[in-house]
Length: 77
Image 1 (cartoon, rainbow, N blue to C red):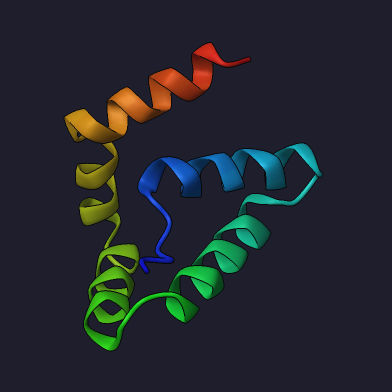
Image 2: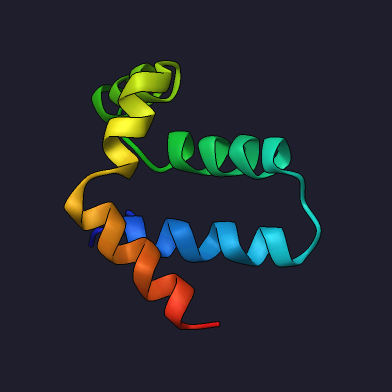
């Protein structure tokens, strides 16, 4: 059984945390902690590397898939 969350589910979690008044830093820490607990060592290492590189984060967020997910979340308001 695969218990990993999809990127869309992680974005939905972030929206929920934001609606509960969590700061951006609190959201980032909570999502990072959750993701690290639910990934194998290789995946968590890759995520840490990307999150620590501002250019990599921008590139990830500007990807077609991320853009589609963000647009879907905006349309759910």
